[in-house]
Image (cartoon, rainbow, N blue to C red; front, side, top):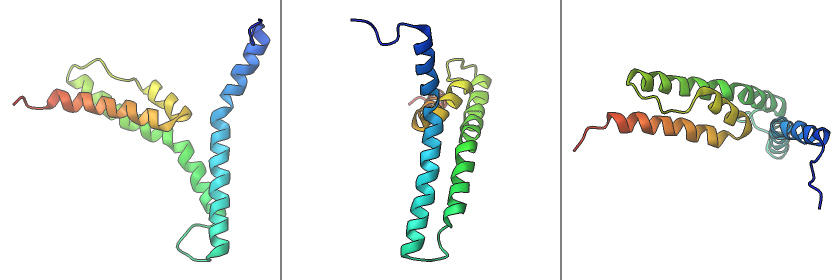
Amino acid sequence: MPLPFQSPQSLQVAVALLCLVPLFNIYYIIRLSYRYHGEVNTINPTQNILSPCAAAWCTILLSVLMPVMTASLNQSLICKLTEDGKLNYYRNWAVILWTILFVPVSFALAQSNMNKLIGQNRPES
């Protein structure tokens, strides 16, 4: 039985298609945000929620700024860990990569760095 990706060209196509997954996720979230805000504004017009266009723009900005926010959060933890001489921590490139692919994993990596920092500074009982 032949393997599905025996030729290098088919492997390259598969990798290229997998690289489009984060972009599709961003598109889908923007589309859902626009649609849901439009539906709620149609059912109950109020000034308490964003217009569909404003909701879509806020979603775009959030998806672009999320890697920056998690990287700056993780960088401050890394600075404190290196000050204390701790070298076993998750690097910023890993946190940024996971923010692009799957946000909860990036927050788990930052939380692990926080736990190392807190566990190191905890007084002994």
